[in-house]
Image (tube, rainbow, N blue to C red; front, side, top):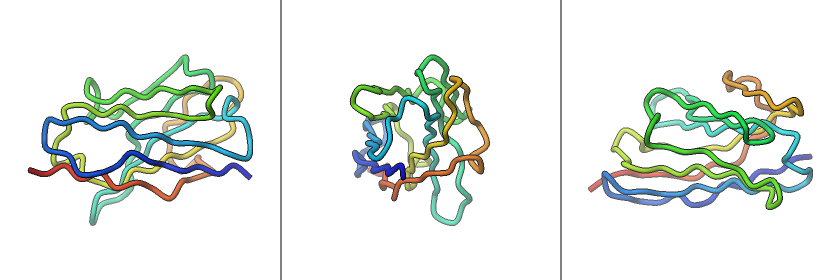
Length: 126
């Protein structure tokens, strides 16, 4: 069973930065596509970004393009989400999710993800 644990959330002022981490255990991450998904209060979950198993392909929601960067270190079994120029509307619980895709493909539909972490809270406020 793949187990995911997010960390790095917190309170940050508008314009600030955070780096979220998603640490995996149970299986090597290098055969999994990883996504970051967020859920704001009263809203549905939305996909923020995803990265293919090798890290060679990435995708971003329009709302975060140019501000967020997803990366992975398969040797450390960890995926990161670097968030810059944060806005109040980025406030949400951020989840990492995984799906077994060994052929280096992106997975945009969040319903396809099989494994989820417990989430980490990001609050952007002055």
